Picture 1 (cartoon, rainbow, N blue to C red):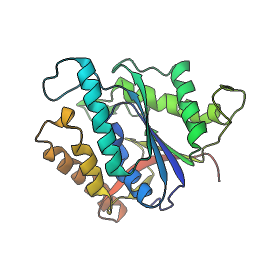
Picture 2: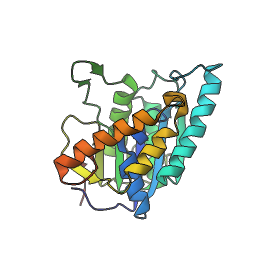
Picture 3: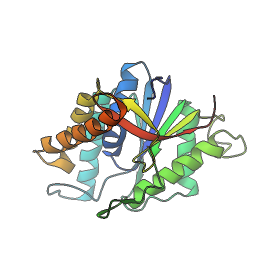
Length: 233
């Protein structure tokens, strides 16, 4: 069980609701413990909605408001929107530069992001292209780029991250107790009305059940699991 609360953390995800679903309980728990949590949303979320939308711009505006509301539920102190179109996020030089800039500015001890090696979940789901691209870009931004003055010299002073936590991993090896924050995770998810519709309670319950399953395996009521990459002391 990972019990330490970092002083600063950055969560890097593709779509507006990804962090809430993947690690919202952990972010809420850390923020309650005094951690300054910053969120990076790489894609606009312009191609997915549970209900009719007039146009993509309206959807993007709605989803940014949902992110702001969810961030308040989780205690996130700042959100960076990078504005890539859905389905077009690539691990390219521009994205890595943007992520390095955020990491060097926020100076996190921990970065949380998707596990890009997780492609097939069972026999009925393929992990989204954007999730995988963001996971690889986050890893490349953390190491070696953010810590080296020779990478992106105009993107701030170098900063070395201590740990990476990969969510959605098929090989998790650490857990975070989210028993005290699972309610805030569910509340954050319910902010995403464009995805869930007005009757989104069912998804919050599904997320609680998943956290309960992880909790039983970890000896607590609710947990979130990660694959940890320890880069420093």
